[in-house]
Image (cartoon, rainbow over all chains, first blue to last red):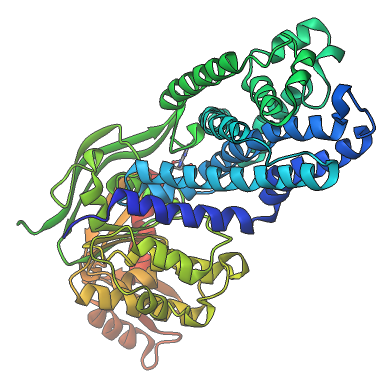
Length: 267
Length: 277
Ligand SMILES: Nc1ncnc2c1ncn2[C@@H]1O[C@H](COP(=O)(O)OP(=O)(O)O)[C@@H](O)[C@H]1O
Ligand SMILES: [Mg+2]
């Protein structure tokens, strides 16, 4: 009798992961609706700030929040979910099944990709409807968003998996991902523009992927003259790609060295 | 193919400074139901987790279905079913979704709807696990343990939280699986459960097997206890003692009772060894 196919099992896992995610009200509110809510709030407050060429504060925030949404549905979502699953017996039960590990991770990929795309669609829809962000103007802009999405989701998912190992129990799962996420949103030019940050803070933010992901989305969604407001005065898309790719590689190494099916406390 | 499903020699496992399993020997024959009976903390779960390839061991020789569980692969895992203690996952899914999903991992699973019926959850099939009672959730665990049609089934205190009717129903399920040839290793601290289900019982305390055998082997029924108003004596010749007492009292012996050792006596004596030792 032959074993079920690993890819087919990955698809099964994906549908189960999606059901679990969207039925769990706390995860939907925290990692999915929260960025949209903040965008609505901050966007409405700062929409009156109009810069050169008529670009409004709401439009700039929409572009930056696209990055926040991706980090939320990948890093925060995966990191906290895995920490909870290591604690509540999910991973123990799955590990005991005749399941190739690749199927498990395929399921997680399906989850972050679907949740990430839905989140991005929600944020862009808010930008278009509330802040008149022009969307369909340029195929290049969609191409840029596509590779930003792939690199961003990959890097942040891997980092989320690695971060989950730091949580000792389900109760610390939220803190282990929400704290770095929230801090990075402040120092990466998402909530507050770079120019308003102390130099060392902006430099620190530039080490991490959110700053580059947000810069990339601004490049994709805002008119080119807005590049003057970036720290380098340019979009630096080549550098964005390089930094995100490096974080993907680093995240993969961290994952492979730290991933555990069992909590360190129950070995 | 030999007739040993599980063979354990000198199994050891410690958690930091707690010795959970100390030099444990155990044999389970193919097709048999073995109950591992012991108090809390005796090392039952640790043993089950090691044998079912869920936990690494510190030492000893272990063969399960011809394989060392330390080298468990997918094929090995598809041949065993596990009902563990203390799971609180899968809450957002319905009973039907979960059982059907778990069936998909196995090369020749049982019919999920039939399994749901066997554990008595047909009426709850479309309910989320979150909405089930503790005993009903345990029945889902049992369903997930058997849906893969395992050759060897591990059940770690499977009936904790069941009402009496659910327990009977569960016993029937285990008996029908045994009749189909499933080898079962069951842990429990209910003596009646061990007596009702098991071909053999292994009594475990402080990480060691204290005794193993059939109920008749464990309960030494050569002796009986004679008690009466003025005394109590354990003897291999109770009839003679009663006759002697009858003469002494010249008629009825006040408050006379003659009792054979029960499994409970044997069990308490066996696990008491650790306290006295
Ligand atoms: N993850 C763990 N970490 C530390 N000690 C443990 C762990 N699991 C079990 N123990 C200890 O090992 C001993 C045996 O436990 P266990 O195998 O769960 O027994 P049982 O299932 O018979 O109640 C107990 O003293 C228990 O406290
Ligand atoms: Mg136990």
